[in-house]
Length: 405
Image (cartoon, rainbow, N blue to C red; front, side, top):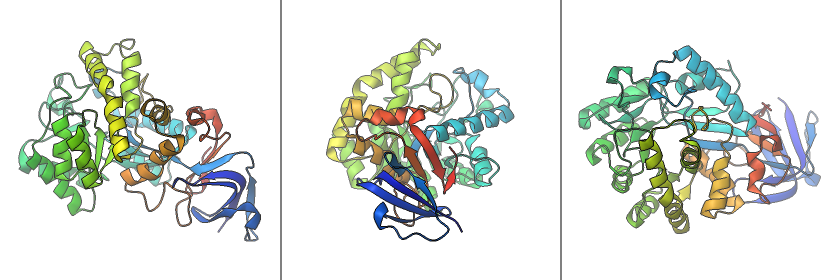
């Protein structure tokens, strides 16, 4: 049993609280005490870390990533990349996440992330906590269907149509080790032959998937741009809405009624609009990204004003310009474009994001009984949220009490 005491830093606890001259005591992988540093009564074996002038806070969480190991925007080339190479690259991406201060992530569609999760959990590789959905569920011709390839070459999505197939698909994902289910309830941006304004899956299909997830104590996350797609997903009982760009007032009310969490993924849209043409994305993708970006901020502001819970998620996947390591960009956008305070953005990236991962009982806040997933930051992000976007400011990173940076 070993104790470490972080002495003298400014504590941002993830619940909205701030404590100057704080003392945070951890024992092995767990936080056991917080309070004023001057009032601490320490066990004799305690190692003291002096962090005066710095900030200690919960590790950041990205609730929407793809640890797929791809290094090309061409889906055909990516589909024929050897899986051994993809796993190696994805493991390298977990290093970038740690460097950026992200101690937990949720992968929402990748046949690779499940294995990366297992390697980290087994201690074969050091990295963030990973929750993984395995393959995302899509209707034929939907967002998760690789439209330019025969279905048998699709290693990212699982195609299912009708209630019976959807039920079996959900069961299959859990059989393979999925932590939760990801469904595509609308068209998307990168998928060439569908429209983000169109709903996908019927309400009955979505209800069957949600039922199967609930039967094993899990939940469903829904990719949903479309107004009707968002509403169908919420009525079916999904826990998190991914993107949610075309959300209207009724959808916002449904979010509140169902206590659902919105993961807006502003980062991916901003990066695709800014850099998509340079990297050769199809004109259809650029056009859809530009269309959605025009309304995204306005609808997100409305949702925030109404009190919808927001969790940070980036949709980053490893290929330039959407490579991992810049995940804190989402916090910056929530402040600069949506109008959240730095504290609200931090809560979205810690406490609420932990709830999106179903990890709210173990991580996301600095309090006794939680896992010691902690950051020591050189400057105060409450004064400037962009402190967190510069990895040089992330001085120390702990996952379960173990220092990884």
